[in-house]
Image (cartoon, rainbow, N blue to C red):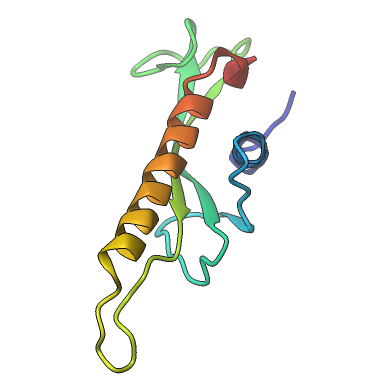
Length: 129
């Protein structure tokens, strides 16, 4: 296999998008990013998957190969990711009116549900298969 960090990020993104679909919380847009994460136009949700660090690994995987000699038989790379879901939340109106408590609470509940979907998907044994 010759997967790049981008290929692994695509796998993570596709896996998470499916997890959101299974939980009836579809995400409208997704992005594989590098470096700083920015989110805009989050109506319907924006999933961002960003490789944060790539490192040479050794066995048992994913142990970082610190000060280990380069082994021609092992070309393992580990990749750490930052994963975020952005959602629009109520904001002040143009006239400066504050959203209702109910609207704010519903938006915060949605953010917590998104966090739960991420947590469950990323800790699932099926994720690493």
